[in-house]
Image 1 (tube, helix red, strand yellow):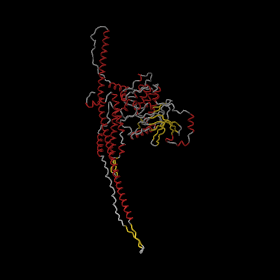
Image 2 (spheres, helix red, strand yellow):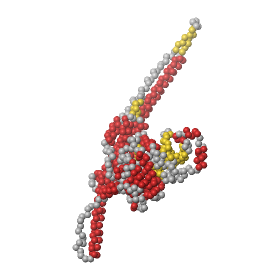
Image 3 (cartoon, rainbow, N blue to C red):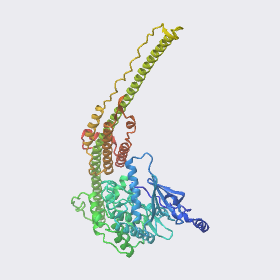
Image 4 (cartoon, rainbow, N blue to C red):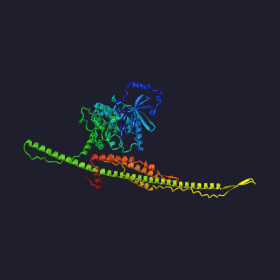
Length: 610
C-alpha cells in the first residue's frame, strides 16, 4: 500500500505560530545575506510533525520568505535493497513533480525541492488544520459541509486530471480541512503521471489504500481518473454516515465488498438529505467504469446544482449481480391443500394460513438447501484453487532451499580455498626460513675460515733489500651456499560443479509458471506468487553471475576465491516475498475457514469433496 501522508500539520494545536511579537522579531532579525540562502541552509527545522513509510515531516521556518513551511525528508529504510531505494526516490521525486505542476486552491502547494548530499527534501505550504479523517472521527457531518468538502476535493482532482495526473490514493488522511472550510488534497506519492512512470508501476501492481480502492484497483488493473472519482464517492458517503461503506475485519472481505456489493443506502441511516445525494454516490461508486462519472467536473456539477443523475443502468447491473449470486429454485405448482373443505370462513382462513406456513417452510428449506449447495461448491472451488497455489508455493520454497544449498557449497569451497592459501603461505615461509638459516650458517662458517686464514699470516723482513713479505700458513675450506627455495605448487579452485548446479537451477526456475493468471478466490496471493517467482529468478541469476566471477588469479599463489562476495550475497528480498506470499495465503484461508491440511488432502487425492 502507498505511503500514508502524515500531512503538513498533523492537526496539532500548537501548529499555528500566532504570536505577532515573535513574528516581528523573526522578520527584524533577517539579514540581507539570508536572501542568498538555498537548500537546507534556508530552512530552520523546529520540530517533527509526523512520519510515515516514505518520509519524515518537520515544521520549519523559511529564513528567506519569513514563513512557516512543512519540510518532508525522504526516509529510506536502513538495509533496503537498491531497487527499493531507487523506487522510493522516484516516487518522492514524482510527488514533487506532480504537486508542483498543479495550480489549485484545493491542492497542497509544493514550494521547493532540493537535495543535500544523499538526502532529499520537499518543501510544502504549512497547513494549520486537521485532516479529514480527524474530522470524520468526531461524527457524521452535516450534508452541506460534506458536499462542500467533496466539491472542493473534486475541483482539485479536476485540475490534476486535466494535467494528466491520477492521484490513486485519495483518502480522508490525504485531505486537509482549514479553519475557513477550504479543503486541500495532498500526497501525490503514488500518483500516475502520463508517460512518466514507465517501469515504476508494473502491470498488476496494486497501489493505494484498500478501503478507498476502486474495483479495477483491487483487481490490479490499469486505472484512470475514474478511480479517483470512486474514492471521492466513498469519502462523501463516509462524511455523511461516519463510516466507510466497504470496511470489514478482513482485507479479503473488503475486496469482495468493493468488487461485488453496493454501499448501503443512505436512507437506512439518515433522513432529510438532498434527494440527489444517494444517486450521486451510486453513480460515483459504480463497479463498471463506463457507468461511473467520467470526469470530476460532472460530479461537481451534480453536487452544486442538486441534479439527480440517471442511475437506472447502474441499479440494473447491481440487481443482475445480486440475482446471479442468490439464485433461487423455481417453486413447483401445487394444488390448494384445503380445496375440498366446506364450511365457514374460519376454515378457509385456517387453510390459507396453514398453506402459507407450509409453502413458506418448503420455500425456506429450498432456499436454505440451495445456499448450502452453493457454499459447498464454493468451498470445494476454494480448496481446489488453494491446493494449486500451495503446490506452486512449495515449488518456490524448494528452489529457494536449493539456491541456499548451492550458495553454501560456494561458501565451503571458498573456505577450503582460503585454507589452502593459508597453507601455501605457511609452506613458503617455512622454506624461506630454512633457506635463511642455512645461508646464515654457511656465511658464518666461511667468515670464520677467513678469520683463521688471516690469523695464520707470517711476515718476513729483509734488511738487505728493504722489503717484507707475508706467508699464510692456513688454507681455508669454504662451504657452498644453499640454493634458493622453490615456491609451493599453485592453489587450484574448481567451482565448475557449483556453477553447473546453479545453471540447472536457473533452468528449473525459468520453467515455473510465473504468469499472473486470474484467480477467483486468491487474487492477491497470485500477485505475491508472481513477485516471489521474480525475486527467485533474480536471486538465482545473481548467484550464477557471482559464481562465474568469484575466482581471481594471483601470480604467486594461484586461484583466489572471493569470500566477501559470497558472504554479502543477499536473499532478503526473496525471503520477504515468500513471507508475504505465505502471510497473504493464510489470511485468505482464515477468511474462508480452510486449513492448509485440507488443501494437502485434496491435492494428493484429487477428491472433489473436502
